[in-house]
Image (cartoon, rainbow, N blue to C red; front, top):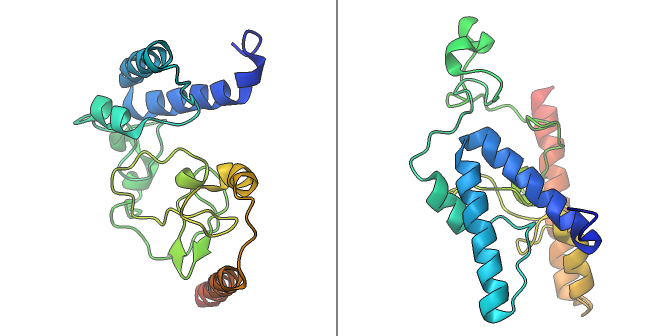
Length: 193
């Protein structure tokens, strides 16, 4: 696909990663999502001459396809390589994800660094453009600048599209937010020691 459409290589690679994640989480639903998404993209081009960005997950379509489908993640640890029945953590009495410990994490389950703003944990899936949760409990804000209008993955694009310089008031707000975040992280780190 990358050879046929080199200008869309990054977009299509992200789509492939999204399809793989949907497959891993929900099994055969990925194929229904793929068929419906590609049909929607084709119809948009034919009927309205609108090109759909394949790197963006269609949340409404994904929710429609995965509605009432149990995620394949282990209820104890959140991993996909085993069922809850065979989880080592369950055998050794380690608390499940739902019981949740209140400690501060440095990395998420995929090894990505966890960021906080004013004590609230940022959603890494949102920052990498892959949050599918209807009601995500984590903060949806860019881990680079703190904006809620985009994730870290699209930070550069948002920065290029926003050619107007920030006012002193906006810069002061961002500095204050950044300082709050740093102070919160320092306090949380001290609390864990």
